[in-house]
Image (cartoon, rainbow, N blue to C red):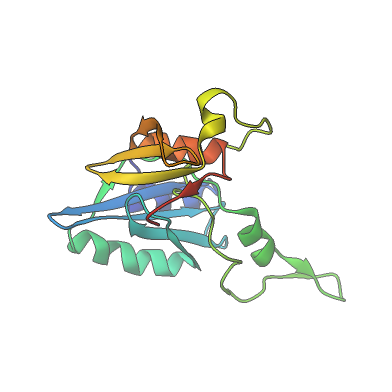
Length: 185
């Protein structure tokens, strides 16, 4: 995991390399994030994930110009860069903006438009989902509920506590077992 900045993203983009950076804002009653990632360069769509930390993000598909205007404004409001892993742009976004041949055979790029619906995960930084069903105590979990102070309880069908998890633990659990419901989102 790295801390990339807008300047780093510009350099990677100039070499047609993918990049991801994350900004966070911490205040007494707010803990927000702003994650930006792209495919490979200036002409690729940019996905912007934002929202409250621990909640499902809102996802926008924008251009590099949007990033150039928005990030300095976020920095001025007190957002700061934090470590984040690389986040690959969703395939649906790439498909929506990939060049398609015209009847004459020349490629064109469709105008920017909103990509299909938001991801159904807690965070865009998730590993791939395994094919195997849950086993052991994980097979009992039907819902995950926040209890406050960054602590979550994994509950069985009768509401009994199976596990106590951190926010990262919930992300990992949801990545592996997407059928588990998350309360409070």
